[in-house]
Amino acid sequence: MKIVMGRVRRRILRGVSEKDQELIHNIAERAVKFSLDTGGNYTRLHAVMDIASAHLRGPLQLSELLMADDFHFAREISGISTHMDMSLYPGKFTNGFRPYYTAK
Image (cartoon, rainbow, N blue to C red; front, side, top):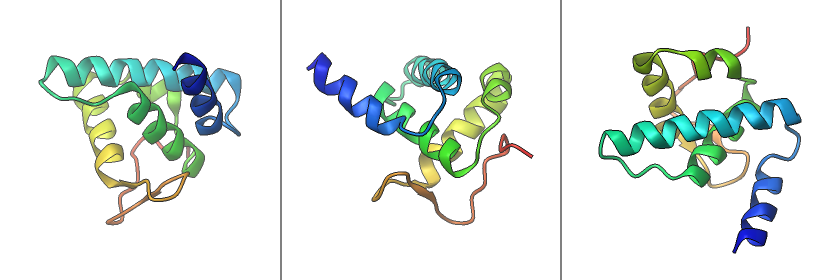
């Protein structure tokens, strides 16, 4: 199972620098922890997929997102996960959603 997950993660993160991959993983960990603390069930795989897709579409200001206060972090992750259409990878945003932490 670990080998399969490694292959999946490599595909998800194709085209993302190693530095950004580390930030994406850290953001995903924080998102999953926040979800579990609030009764949610957001998985690490879904978090990585959503954040990586948003970054490939964006790019996102990953460092700023990781350091955001809880309110802004939760709002951004919730918006990304809610409005990301993952029928194809990388996903695309629906309903005109645009992440606040998109690089300017």
